Image (cartoon, rainbow, N blue to C red):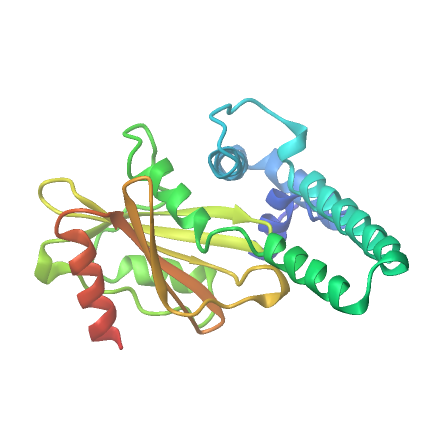
Length: 251
């Protein structure tokens, strides 16, 4: 294969969503380009580690149950069971009681905390000294060019230089909705702030602006340009104020 596959096909392959001739073409290309194959394998490991962190387990061994195809199949089976249960309840409950059960079901489906993967990515990269970025910038504009290469109409990266933070690297991740990316900033003391962008969640769900803390970290999140964004930092110290000021200036 002389022509590289499209980035969309590469990420669909990482997600386990590429089938047939297109999958064979990607595999053939990767077999001929070991450097690119190693990069794709790293993305697959990243996706698995994110799922492990998101699921509250530290095991990083290969686990078919964490494969995106398996996860989506389990979700479909779960929805089928919920629909069957709803049909059964119709026979014995009033319309009002059924409405209450449906509301509880909807709340259960939406129980995932917003931008949990952004926090998991921060833990994976910013707090792990062995983690390596996919790209290290040489000049100030290189990280924005890197984001523009992978995401159409992506937001401009915030300039945190006035607070002493500079972009030191970027890393791509795979989500069930498509590729995501994180740009990591650090200051002279090594304090980290991340900028994370991902496709909207299930049912094309965009997020209202907000913030939350988890395990000593704070995520300040918003949506725009068809993507969900978050900036993650330690919840204490100066970093949350630096992020809040940058978001206010971006307005």
